[in-house]
Image (cartoon, rainbow, N blue to C red; front, side, top):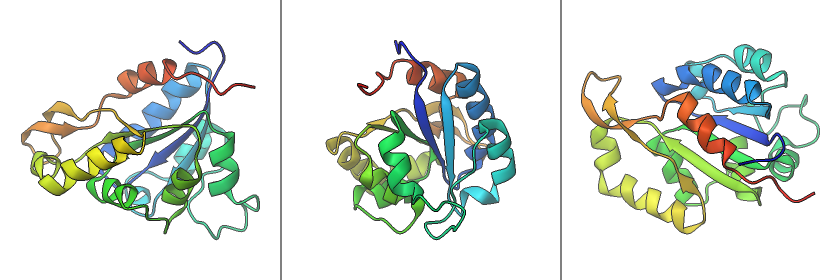
Length: 183
């Protein structure tokens, strides 16, 4: 259990499960953690930057080229964080991580991170079961990233099976088990 509040970078990618991101931010903040959010372009189709900024009390990073983030968020936030958490993490984002892509602020930040990195997959059951997705999940675990989930349950498609993002309270509980960086 963490002895002090953690500095958490929450990455939100383009899954319908992104609707849970505001609840996750609220839970993390309520638990005393400082949260900064990174929103991918696809994630912004499901949740607004204003919502995440209001709940986290910090600007939301959306672009490597945002002049408001003069300190190059992908570098400064990666060294600031105790944990980079991606929830939800789509199949596409898992593939980008597995292959070391750095075309957006979130994947660039993760490549620069020296802290703990965890991803919470969220996708339909056939996508999660696909050999490429399973291979990508295994590859990122080889890099030292943690894969939290997915859960079994009802999916946005109406199907039931593995692919559901863990519930925000379960993610907050896992975050509490993250050791802070040494001062």
